[in-house]
Image (cartoon, rainbow, N blue to C red; front, side):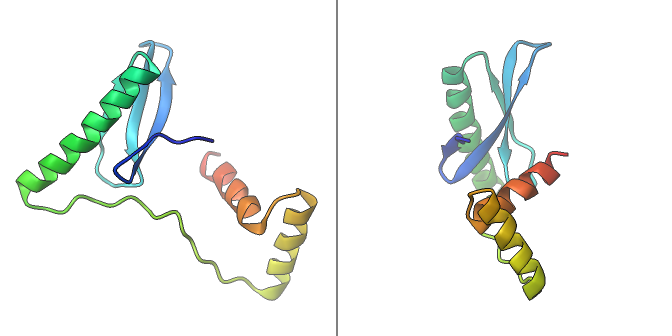
Length: 110
């Protein structure tokens, strides 16, 4: 999956059939920052404008902008679970990292 990125921020994008718009939000921060566009080109421009506006607004308010998650997650597993995960990943022809990311992604969207 490709992500729309700008200045270290990523976009979460959905389609609204009702409005005929692509709707996005800055992902990985608690502040709610949304944008939209009728085409990918418009959405990209709106995303960059939203990030710039967010950063400018934070500066005007004198507070640091929230930083998105780095994407790095460290886990400590019991050896038996680690072995089971390694086997499942190998059977799926994936790295352990990719297999775990896929499982977590499915669970996060369930």
